[in-house]
Image 1 (cartoon, rainbow, N blue to C red):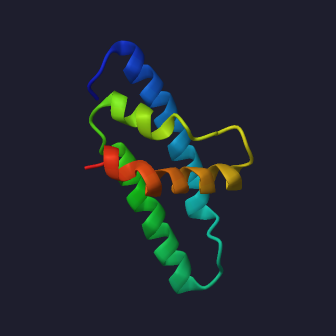
Image 2 (cartoon, rainbow, N blue to C red):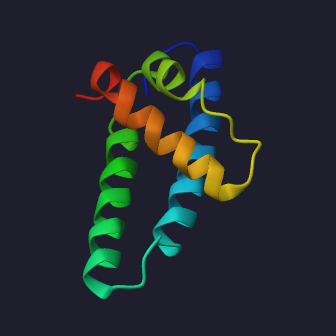
Length: 93
């Protein structure tokens, strides 16, 4: 990842929180239908890959800094997904 040492540390912390949240989401699909569970897991895996694909620490920070990771895990998940869907186009290539 490119950026200053401080940026990289902050970006890695945000990414770690995002990955923990997405891993939880992957295992806790909002449905029980097998075909929908698979679509959900694919959707979540794609989001994780997009975040991990960001090369610049500043872009990770700008994308994830507004996500409040201090709520409940399900709220964190919806907040994270909403933020990525809304602002990801600016930071994810």
